[in-house]
Image (tube, rainbow, N blue to C red):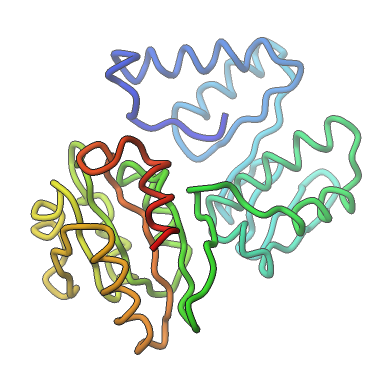
Length: 261
């Protein structure tokens, strides 16, 4: 249980009900691995510990007191002083993947793998499709497929993983649009907006950030590539911060279309 945000509420009703369902699942486990970066998860940890459920805490924050946490360059295991660097592993780029790696370490250690075996696994991990997926290069331009980011909260870690990006975003917008991404706006060299949310996203972007209303994903990819080829930061990131249903059946089809371009 790594984090909890206000998503899927059309199914669960309230965030509290959603949290309760998640907690019941992990309370029945032999070992609960729980993130510490939001108040709901911290409260879960306190209740699990009080109920004597074996628990390992993980965090993406460098100043965390969690059992295993991301320290800016890799993960640190407090109990054994183990450190595993993630700096050269492109599929585990970003603080959010630092937390993912911490959780993976906890699970693998619980079934008997050594730290060196886990590190080898990290180095061979190709990444997950549509989740910060390194598609490949066109010349010197790196393409990243993060089509699974269907809201602003999910897009934030991807933006935070790069110094500068050419950002493709938009689709069927959700409540709040991209307002919560304001702390990451300075990482956007230029934005390329698509789908129904394009106009709304453009109106929410800082006045200092260049953008275009590309309309379609195909046009956004072509224009982003042309711009990135001239840049010192040649990264094109699809992290839509919106659902796909205005132009694609699902986020998987959107990601596949991005890779096909």
